[in-house]
Image (tube, rainbow over all chains, first blue to last red; front, top):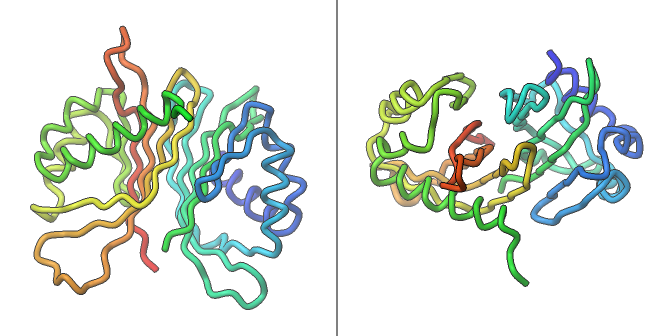
Length: 118
Length: 129
């Protein structure tokens, strides 16, 4: 439901127009990307834009969801494949999001952690 | 540079969790409460008793977790979000078989009076290439 819609939106935006991701984050949001921390929408969006050409295999993602610390927060755990550049081999990745609701149907990403799996 | 407290909490927890898992799985019970939620390979389980029942009935006796990365963030409600990636070695597997890759995410929630943390959320996935 909410989680699936978010995941579809997140990865299609990331793959086609990463600068539009800024709207999903707030100043308190934190991304850890392969062990490096980025805080706030601008830093996070810049990191995603700097990845260059990337394509996530959205239909094949596995997504797990659990309600978290309170009724407004949701833990989402994704594993799947992505390709970097036009000719890259598929790489396995795993990503964790903590979504927090600010009102009916409105969410932002409070925590975001990404790891490639070697 | 000193490590922020949530990093220390996260790392200490991961070490304790996998040591206990690999030596005495039933002792993990004290880390879970009735509201704890566990997903194991897509199967959703809630509550301390059910979670321990699942963990102790997994189809292997001996296992060793080798952690390759731990990421920690503070999250809502003074919780700690922990994301672990690593390898799993299961008993009886030949030493030259490539290890099973896994990733696991926990949200830790503080116990009253600063007595420690319990596991609110736990999601485990094996990662196949």
